[in-house]
Image (tube, rainbow, N blue to C red; front, side, top):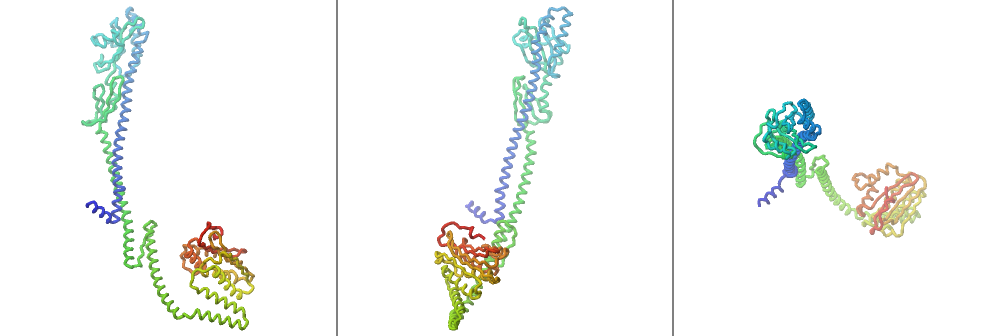
Length: 573
């Protein structure tokens, strides 16, 4: 019941409220949803981009760390496989004191030239097993056998149980944490262990790139069980982990991205999103309100006008010069009111004129019979006095009068042609030997029905405009034929040509949508309208004229049973 009441309330709401509600449903609410979706996607994409970027940085840092180990190990491999170094160790064991000094200097030169990883390297030494001597690159010559005695890795290397070890330890120089890389030297001559190469890598300097990676970000890196934290203040919270495997360390390095730092950037983005959304919603609301007020105001004006018209006030005029649909409705309403007013007035005047015509008809019932009788009397009097021209004229005029006063609208072509002949008879008496009349009437057309007084006004125009102002002998041709489903009537004269400007004006007046009220070209316009009313839009009145060619007026009237298609080439203006 409540739902039905809400629907009824919506139906009865004003158009302004409906437009506003539609804007919220169609525009504002979807925009809010789209903003929420876009922000959610933006956060996810940002997190993924941060993870991807952090992964790249972590991979690069781990790769750099592994490359340090690889360089150090490569330098050691070159040293332990160097034949000259192995020969020097053999010679040192068997040599004199002076020879040992020279061989010691050779070993130190080799250590100096050994590929290292820069300042990240601590002590680099060679330990000679049989001589129990240690020589280092920095001339400190710390005794490895004393420092590493009892260390399992040291004993395993000298015993040949393993070829390479990497151990955590303390530097021989200052006790700082280092990674110890050691590889035994195996003689290629007898396969015995001659000693070992010892290298220290400074842990702090080796993992310094990790510190650089997290510095000032609040993130952290877990490397070899040690937590590297940036200098920025970090509260406990959630992290997004990123991992990269280090072949040198033999484990994953974990890069923890602190969500608080990411969320801090997202908060700014959310603020901008919300501000943009609020501004956009306000703009949409204001623009929609302006448009809704504008449209509803015009519609309300239109509604008030229709209410006034409904009360009988036909003097209402709505002013709206816009060309949209509402403007078209306003123009249509104004036109309708004007037509209604004119129709009511014309109907009122028609009724008055009808009443007056009825009174006049009642007073003049004998007038037509009086005219016929008078014409017959004139004819008989002229016949008695042997004036046959007057007889012919009076009889022709009497027959034309009877024909024009018949009540029927449609007549046979035969009757219309006979009326034309009577008219021509009168004109021959008026203009003797001035023109020649020819008739080309298809016998099949004689029974076809056409409007009364269709041909005679056209013939009259030919005499009026073509023959009166020229003394030359002229020709008039009246033709009726059937052509492709149409009855074609042509009235041709070779008299004065109609000027081109006049032809253009006549064609304009004959256009179906021309509503100009004028008596100009009355006969042709009246005939064209009668044909349109009786036979529809396919009927046509056309006019051609030219100097040396003559003037031809053509009528095209659809037959009752249309056959072939129209042949517009014969009838176009």
